[in-house]
Length: 91
Image (cartoon, rainbow, N blue to C red; front, side):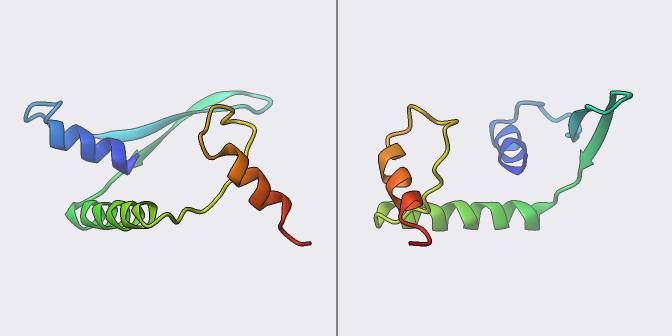
């Protein structure tokens, strides 16, 4: 959500209007209901996001990545590497 919020601000998509962010969640219980979770972030949070993205980019440029094998990403270019890494765990 923080990435989305930063993009909205950087692109000025709300054109000066107040920016409010929230998750609208459908809680699937016996009695389903919608719940709203509001997000409040400030400049410190945004700076932290940019620092994390910068560090991740540096790691990727250096050839490092943390594999996460999942069947949810069948078209991923790193699929085979992640599967091999996952299969070699706890041997």
